[in-house]
Length: 250
Image (cartoon, rainbow, N blue to C red):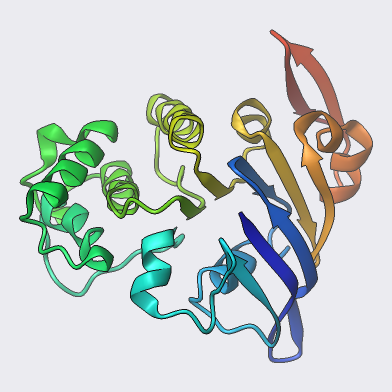
């Protein structure tokens, strides 16, 4: 469980996250909202990538500010929207980085099990020995997701993980996240721009605007014409297809 207790984060005079209070349980939770809504900043504050100006967050009861880094990383993995490395790594080496919080060198039997599992889950066997700068944007994105999975944390934060992915790999990744959440009792939070993907694959949706949470609940409660039209200042029509809510923008 992730508990967010009145977190506020400012960038100068701009309030990026404004007194957000949330409880996020197991399953897949999608965060949606227009550009500048505070989605990425909220995720970064929970993942201790940026310091909050007020409030705190807890992961399984552990305060993310005061908990030792290694212990927190054993419970929580986070993937940022932009990932840049100053060194040249192969896919396999990058995925092995996910084992560092557990004190692994990437070579112990337990490490190898998690690394091989993550490479297989993200369909990276064919490129495992290639360097990241030799890959397509989508392949690199999947490699970073694999690193987060290899970390074997039961809470995972992913900021726009579908960037650069084609439809096949986008659907495959979202199906994988749902399966991992169900089979491993994980809490997975995903920032998404595609409302239809969020509607199809998320258990719950958090809708943000101007740094605040305006809606939080099951898909059926959040994905409505009134909610989305107001959230994005664009007329939305919501229909049902094969038991799923589909959004058409007008």
